[in-house]
Length: 565
Image (tube, rainbow, N blue to C red; front, side, top):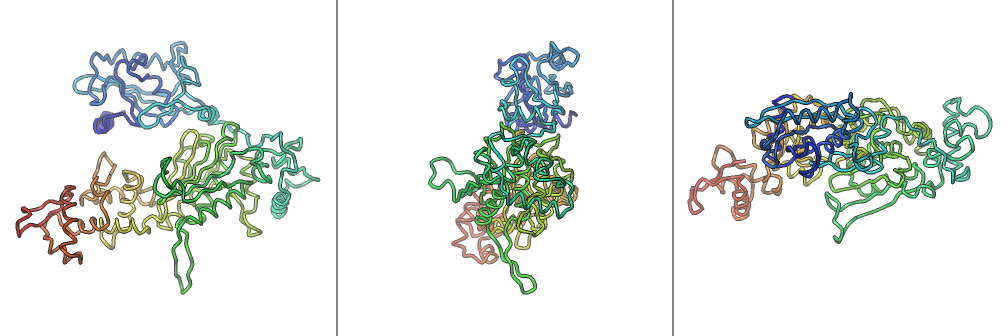
């Protein structure tokens, strides 16, 4: 880490008054044990098992100033000893992550920076004297949390090519498979001149991995072509919940769900039923083109279908994951799909749309390429050729929506699809109040992201719009110059706190008040078409929040207002 980067991190930590997901700070006592409640080696394990990070040694929270009695030389030696590949007996964690170490000066004293890289081999990285089960951690916000058994399993096999989907389900037999679906798959293979169906009887079912050599249905065969797979896997369903607000309701509230459905059956049944309930609970808008009208779902149907197909095809079907269902949560502003299992084969969040298919379940993925989606229209449940995520992104962009937002944990993959984006009436009113009637669409997307994510960067905008990050940075700087956004850290822009809580009317009035030229309430009435009486409570609120300032006392006839934020 270069000194400039260290300064940026330290400034952010001091502003927060706490660690975060990128940095853990430890005083002298954290080096050898848990005298300060935290162990250095717990954090090494946590960063190695997640995205990597930095450990600052020799600073004291919450002001992040040098620790009294800290010896940078001794601390560096302790780190090198505990991570020494040539001395297994001295190693504090296993397997060892890659790391770098340097010393920097803070307020005239030295502290040590340890940078831990994420593991590039199977893990998990665990603290040796605690053992794997009690010494494996992950980084969550500003803390190190123990991994559960599924997360440990995922890291143990992250770079392995398992054949879980080809395992026989010993309690099942051939009668548990749906003959109509099997016939449909056979028909597609025959129409495609596939050699896999050569031979007599059910030999092709074994070649496809639908049944084992002993004639027992496999996991892939049963979930894709079974009559009712939940007879053997009770939790392998899709749980669809429609929430009344933007977050899950707390237990005990009057309305926890507006709609709820457990979608079971084979994968084709589950995806079809899930799409049906999603369509029921999303809005549509009417589009008229060349004198013809048609309804458009607020999230394109193609994107929803692709996201669900990915979820059922790539979820983990290992025994430890079979107790977890796929969750579809529909909120007022977004739809979230959560699937059990991390990314397989060393895949990362940055390589999701590289067009290279790395299926966790290769037998299932091949089978779903032959499961007809609907009748004989030529469509299948999943194409499995690596084009799905790029197509999802381009389809969302064409609809004027932010691209899908993927989040990957050790044992979960989540995709968030935003609803209506800028078309939503409430969001549109909010944008009009900030930017005016004919607002720039790129600026609007930047503000919506800042509102939804808490902050927006040029990289966020590049991912959501496809535009050059340099252009997007200039756009953000322009919004900051107009005081619509504030640059909180280098490259991170946030909405000024008071702006996020304003109503559409308050934003509209604020937008009419200049930073340079005082505006009277009569002038505001003429501009906005509102009466002075209706404007007074709005003005009082804007003054109280510090968004505008008065140029004269309340009793003065010359009282006018200037915008301050």
